[in-house]
Amino acid sequence: MNSPDGSKNLLATLRRIGALTAPYFRSEEKWTARALLAAIVALNLGTVYMLVLNNEWYARFYDALQNKDQAVFWREIIFFCWIAAGYIAIAILKFYLTQLLQLRWRAWMTRSYLARWMADHTFYHLELARYGQKDGQSPDNPDQRIQEDMQLFTDYTMTLSMGLLNAVVTLVSFIGILWGLSGVTSVSLFGNTYTVPGSMVWIALAYCAAGTIITHYIGRPLIGLNYQQQRFEADFRHHLVRVREYSEAIALDRGEQVEHEQLKLRFGSVLRNYLQLITKQKNLVAFTASFGQASVIFAFIVQAPRFFSGAIQLGQLMQVNSAFGRVQDSLSWFVDNYDRVAVWRATADRLTSFEAAMRAHASETSALERTPAVSGEGLQAADVSVTLPDGVPLIQGAALAVQPGDSVLLQGPSGSGKSTLFRAFAGIWPFANGRVSIPANAMFIPQRPYVPNGRLRDALAYPQPASAYTDTQLVQALKEAMLPDLATRLDDSDAWSQKLSGGEQQRLAIARVLLRKPAWVFADEATSALDAETEETLYHRLTSGVKAAGGAIVSIAHRASVGAFHDRRWTLVPESNGSAARYRVEAM
Ligand SMILES: Nc1ncnc2c1ncn2[C@@H]1O[C@H](COP(=O)(O)OP(=O)(O)OP(=O)(O)O)[C@@H](O)[C@H]1O
Image 1 (cartoon, helix red, strand yellow):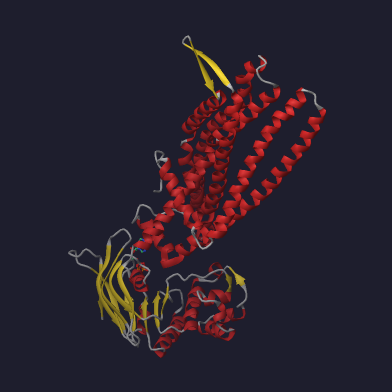
Image 2 (tube, rainbow, N blue to C red):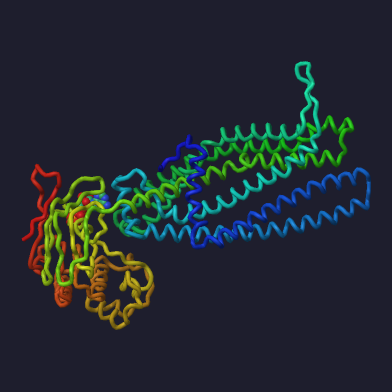
């Protein structure tokens, strides 16, 4: 799904575009959407009607010129002003309503994708699947799909489909006119004379069919190249953002050179692909420009014998030329828009693969049966096994229990799966099975807490709204977490994740726990960056807090000193060679 296949047929593309488009026009906004669409279609038809009026005007106007008829000349000039006024009014309204529909559609689509991406940890699972290559359809750069592709898709769907509608209606309107104006042409072939009605129509059809086939042949590589271009651009931007986010670590590591090389590498891919893209585009432009220029004189050349023989007047010649131009314009829709169709199709492919990945995630349920513990009961884990995203078994058959009042230390070698076992208990690790019942009011402190930028009070209350707490509660939590200096800065806005030291960020995460007062706490290396004295004070506060609330604490820690704050131990020990999994848990 991630790479476009040039041979994918038109029908499949249209089906994909239909599947991306239909939900909005069937959504709760459907009546507004359909009304706007109907108005836009009507305005497009109005534009074509204006063109028909304009074409008839051509004949009258040029005949007046040829006959040097001043009265008709001025009457037609006034009539033209009316047509022009109608055309302008329609153009303004059409632009405004089209933009409005596009905006509403994009807004709806973005909201709907955001809701699905954020639901059920989809955003996290798609990343896991990507790195674990668990499924081949995990999309790259979902940020780009949500931010850029949706804008492009709605824009191109509207402009291209309305352009196509215009082309079809113009074609239908003018083909009749052109047919009538073409008269009957006699063609001599192999000694026989044939009469061909509507010759200009046949000529226009043949001319444009040839143009379309050649355009498709020249422009086909653009679809794949556009798809790749969007991907390379997103990869480059993503790397730039990472350098910005990890600026300090990179600077300390003296990693500038490596990052610079990496950025150049990614930008190199952008440039190389772009160069290929413009080379192919150049061929397409060469053809479409020649095609367009040839069209200017084509009808004159074909009609010249009839004009010079006196069969038709100047007015009719101009009218045939104008009608031929319209028919040829409509038939050349594909020639003129090939470039945009290529971008449109690449965007639709990207959104479809994103959609498919989200759908696949929604239908995939974790085999871990996770239920809320009955009030007063603790954590019960039975036969819990955890695997890595690539399917490698990590921990097998864990049977564990924690009673209210307990404090348990989970230990084991680095990389043995301690954090992953916590992720499974938290219900976010999809590659686990077995049964877990866990108290509903459990709070997990991750190894690297997320500290949003903005006001300190929001970072402290995260993910709850700061308004859920009084200033007194917020200040008290900061003081209890041994961050008294921050107590006066609740309303300061800053890049806290970069400003606060590692230890301060850990204390902020502990302040959140002290603020929310959950009965159950799962702390993953929550104090690893703190000095022994602060660690002891904070552990004392955490343990007495959960015990007072009738709960327990389970901690992961490497430092032996943390053991002193816990009554029991779980240890991850390497499995003997016979087992598929790498580790098992021994409870003491
Ligand atoms: N998203 C992921 N994709 C692939 N592998 C992962 C992912 N997350 C963790 N792992 C792997 O799972 C294994 C266990 O990781 P985990 O973080 O649970 O270890 P840990 O015991 O907590 O280690 P440490 O003590 O170093 O924090 C590691 O080998 C790690 O590389």
